[in-house]
Image (cartoon, rainbow, N blue to C red; front, side, top):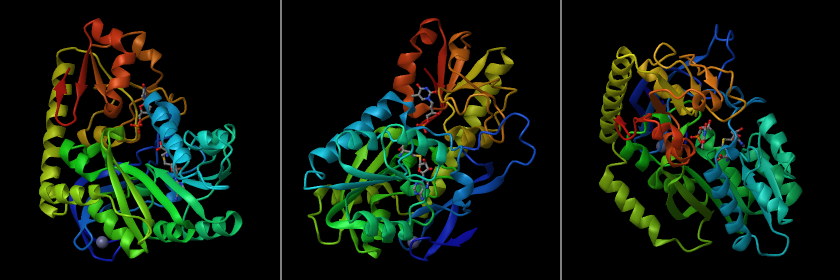
Length: 406
Ligand code: SAH
Ligand code: TMP
Ligand code: ZN
């Protein structure tokens, strides 16, 4: 399978083929699974600009809609993270007269609510209606649209240039990334910055975190690919900082070309990426082999425990669960349910494998022998919350970076 690169038109060769998958965040209602949508989950790298991307693309209106179930405020650690980002902007970039901040994919308003409380002009761009409503209830101003070049032009005409543009776990979701970068170049003030943080290819490869691959992640960014993409659209990568969040992310800072000094971190990270072989097809092919090993090990372990009569329940239903359970063929016969704290996911099913999603009380009311941790990036928070489970002899199963029991 080959495709033209969405950024530069180079050739993208499909190196990781995980087979047919449903949408990560579909979470169908029971009885509503007759005509589930499936696509082929193939990921490859552009042989010119090295951008890692999905080969098959699903229209954005199918992915983001009124009932988009992900709520950014769902984790205490994420809430603190986004509040710190907001405070950081208020202390540094938003100190001039009447500054203006724009967030792409502002979701339930976790970041912008802090900016709003400080009385700073802001605008969230958020096409999913229910989460946009939740942010309005927090005093956040929202434009219920998909961000692109046209949106950027209209925002600039109405509000003037932006001092800060921000996005988290959204920029890599947008297949028209070229239009987003053109929009950023249009909307940013000469002194402004476009900051975004997204799952990092280096961490994904290092941890064999193949579950990060699903329909919404149109791209998996690297410093090298973002630097090249920025350059095409009159922007410059001036800083990059690794983040622990989401199991390994990178925060990129773009500015109009030539407007700001470039941090030495950029060069250091580029060297590290070259040493890790991030720009080579062979690295992705090796990753695909390791993903198959994790699949085989996890399937064998779960089947074995099940055969021994052990009860295994899933913990956390992030979009990632759709990739793992479909790729491994793990359904309700092996895992009767998975618990998740997000109300909009409870009572629904994991797409494709149809494992029911229940409230966390279903877990604590009747502890299983084993809990398979699908929200592995929240391990610390969840294990602390469910201390009693381990105290009573329950064991956690993890599959990142390999299959193990703790
Ligand atoms: N920033 C939050 C939410 C990430 S989920 C966090 O990091 O937790 C991604 C969000 O981006 C969803 O709410 C989705 O509706 C929104 N989104 C998707 N495509 C978009 C686009 N083109 N423009 C603006 N928002 C978009
Ligand atoms: P994420 O990895 O995309 O942030 O998704 C994490 C999922 O895990 C989300 O659906 C919420 C759920 N979750 C819990 O059920 N309990 C928790 O304590 C935490 C932190 C998350
Ligand atoms: Zn390319």
